[in-house]
Image (cartoon, rainbow, N blue to C red; front, side):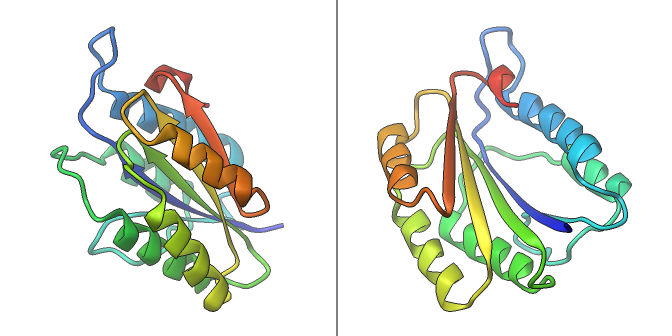
Length: 166
């Protein structure tokens, strides 16, 4: 079955104890994920950027987008990022399994998550969500509780460090 992935990196410039940026660990894991789980012919991926709304269909493009991603560390409007990603994935074939992967170390509440579930349902976009929280400076308890309440649509995983993302 064909799959579509939307990836949002809501990550600060935090460094792990070994001095390596958390972002770099996540990027490495995402590249591994694409190589192992995203079919070069059938599957598609969208890597969130505020000025880009095209899906990628080739592993080389997907790996390149992930590997070349950089940030200045400024936070962005997570509601807009989620909405844009859901709309891009929603435009894919309705038979695709559509999953939004949100990697975050700074989400402060679940308002944006509540809002995107409503938008996803109202527009019949067909997306599922996975929130991967990293470190101890985000609203872990609220996100975990939200995911538990909406377990049919939202999965949650907490990682203490960027190295733990898998």
